[in-house]
Length: 100
Image (cartoon, rainbow, N blue to C red; front, side):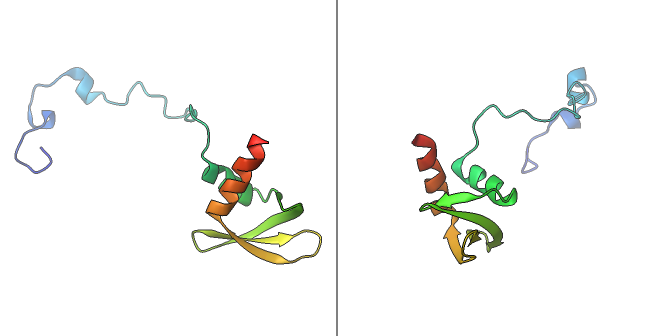
């Protein structure tokens, strides 16, 4: 069908009514509910966007900006020192803290 070698129901004048009414019963204003937990990467990105502080080696860091697709620049709140962490490292840190 996708290659043009076969016909779909759109090609026939008579087809099931439900085929023409696809999506009608769907509530398009309803927000999609999550049925599964967020991944470690989603948790990290959420914290970075929300600028929630992250404890790294006993020091509090706040995200300043993304550097490329994979790294996040943080500033230590006490000293102002900047550090760059990659998403893999941050995901492991957050996962480890949840287990403790």
